[in-house]
Amino acid sequence: MFGMNGKILWVDLSQGKSWVEGLDENVYKKYLGGVGLAAYILNREIKGKIDALGPENILCFASGPFNGHNAPLGGRLEVVAKSPMTGTWGDSNCGGKFAPELINSGFDALFVKGIAKKPVFIKIVDGNYSIEDASNLWGKDAYETETDLKKIDPRGQAMVIGVPGEQMMYAASIMNEFGRAAGRSGLAAVMGSKRLKGVFARGTKKVPVFDEAMLMDTIKKAQIQFRNSMNLVDPWHMFGTTATTEPSHLNGDTPIKNWAASGFKDFGEENAKKISGEMIRKDVLKSYGCAQCTLACGGHIKRSTRYGDIEGHRLEYEGTGAFGGLNMIADLDAMSMSFELCNRYGLDIITTGAAIAFANECYENGVLTKEDIGFEIGFGNPDAEVKLVELIGKAEGIGKILGMGQHYASRVIGKGSSNFAMDIGGQDLPMHDPRLMPSIGTTYISDPTPGRHTAGTIGFNEGSELVLPFKHEASGTKIPRYEYHGKGHLQLLAVAGNEIMNSTGMCQFSTNIWQNSYPYSEFLKAIMGIDFTSDDLVSIGWRIQILRHEFNAKQSVNQYDIKPPDRVMGIPPLKSGMTASITVDYNSLRNEYLDELGLTKDGKPSSEIIERLQIEPDLVTA
Image (cartoon, rainbow, N blue to C red; front, side, top):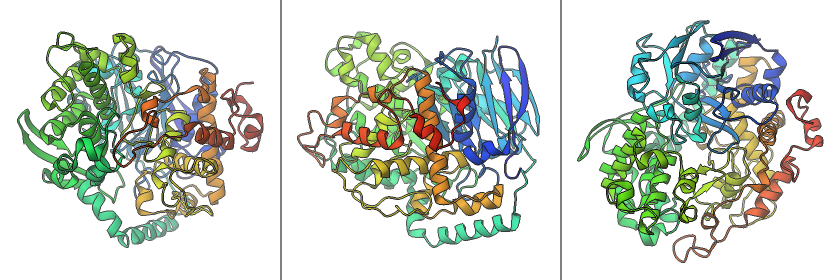
């Protein structure tokens, strides 16, 4: 076998045992690695409904074939388990440098089950592995924990949780590199439930590839195209994802005032300019990238705020939306500190900002009071935002409730507060509005991880042309923005392409530079020695997506039953702004896509699609 180790590491924390499993090359031919490998193993091992916070849940950290082989932008990690937040398949993609370190340590993935009797961390160094006592780390924040684990070897990498993860809060995030996060799906709560404080990996044994010369030639060709696309690269390098902050707050992309207002009319051009990429860039000391990254969209900053000094990571778009327009705030001191506190405590910025917006609307409607919270809150109150992030990070007072996300919090608070909870399937929504991009609404309600903008969508291409990770005959197809029929097949292609990125370890931002053109087939041939056509890649991505849905079916989840909040889909429509009068026909979009995908009305993959995609019988229920 080339490009991958052909081995995965198992840890049973209940038994205090670890062992290595070898995998046949055919598994990699059908599922590659990353989320594909996780989908194969979790469906093989989990046959029915389980408790997401119980010992039977399996937590996976998976690398892909691009990890550790210098494929540009191929350094991403996939974290997978059943989500306690949604009760569905949960996965979260993470940057940083952990993924190449894991594969070079001798293992393609780590699978953890059981619950430890006391806090532990897992240590993996060049093929050696052990379960270590973490009692002295329990109660420490993410920065402190990562610093301590990297004392094992400063060249190694650690995935860690802070106190919110220990407390099994759904807003908790798994952290790496002091600011890179596997934040979605509440998977840090799964770590906390297992009393797993962290995972440390150090690897120096580079995995052999099939054709080193071909690999170097393919890297060179990819780099040439990159250098010839500097007009696309420069904004990412200069501003990161905040390049879109100002326009997105005005054009209907960023949800405003908990999805109830218009960016152009209610937030305003002046406020959008205050939190623009240009303004945020003033704090940047230097740009940086994740493993194998040539884009370098990250930025290390230094900023003195009225809340204290920050030396950390630049705000990213989701943070500017969550701590900005969603809460009607245009104060970079408060937004930057809120972002920094999330990184330090180990919190998902989307869920945290969304929960605060929910609390603000509850407060302004008399559902929550000053006595409930301890101080005055409300939209446009930056000081209250920072205080609420601190309470969530410390799991104190109202913060412990909000830190479970809006869906959970609304059930605890009651009093009609569910009307203000903008979640789908339990997942707090990201900062992209279906009223501008209807097909992102398809993704929010139809992906096995509901409420996710990174799960594969044509939404970002609507009004333009289809962009896929690799060249395909459908690339460049025109996609009308507000057409509600005829999009199902294009959505399926986008989803399949997304699963290929998540299975190889590829960064999704690569499609912004190598549009329809990243040399996946060439890299996979050079690394693994396997020939894949673009149609092969679509079939692999499709197969992985079906297994993610199969997992949901085992958890008694019917994708057709997942409903969005009316407000998010424009019921009633906004009265002003770029998306005024828009109501999204999400049922037509979803039904056509899921039918194209091969899902029956009871939410299960059809027998025909199981056979067509050659999915192993032992992975599916009868």
